[in-house]
Image (cartoon, rainbow, N blue to C red; front, side):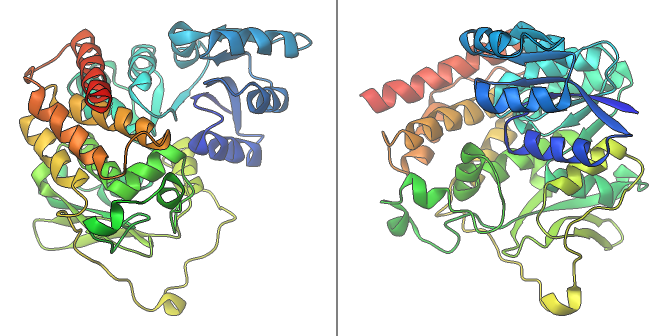
Length: 383
């Protein structure tokens, strides 16, 4: 029986992770869970899975939950201290970080120090603090298993292969909601337009990042840290069907790829049972029926999130934090309809131009840089 702690249990990845646990009641159990503020959805999860510890980040929501589940023997916490308690809970085997944003850094570091296997779906942790996380993983001797579909695919393609023989990583994407459109067409696109992803069922923020290709830029940086490959050796390709997930090219010219229908249950289950594989009730991939698998070059003139990400990776240090934080703030403003879609790129670039890079930032400096970037974006919109 594997015991699992989850932060972000009411989000897209979290709910699908609970699907996997629900399907394997004799082998998996959720012992600790955390969410942001959705009391109603979280209460349903707590009553079904009966974890011993739960956390709602929002204190008022946590107090409400205490009253709702006072009939259950479940301890309720809140805030960052609560997230860290969930991450390092004694008796848990796997810590799944399924939150969106830099809020996931501290819990991940706590779980590493507590000796947990890390199932990571929070790309911002490595994008902004990879230089802290990877050495900590090595020092603690714990496993770091990627849950993002793309990075899980890379991990599977590299399993058993010497990393020193990797020539390039080929990172694929669907192209997002606006694939094929030009800048003039994007000027008046609404939040509703951006959220209409053709292939993947994701949360709102990640879906908008997919539409801007910022998400793929974040994944380039994440792949660089996870697999020890320089960012300029991570090539992005558009694969509109989302059938061929990332591939790995080796020095002898061989390319190994993972193919599957787009379904996040697969990488989540793979992480939970690694190194084993289990049957899944998802559609079988019929290559004869599919026929052709197409690849395209991304339009980086229109979707500037990708070249800005490569720039952030090249400058390194604190610049990836600026890229990520400025994007998070800009996306929030876009979702509130305070800016246009294309303004996201301008605000990210402005924040990057304004920042003086810190070569090897501490965690405190990372968090300070995050706030400075957010304030820069907000001040630019107000001005």
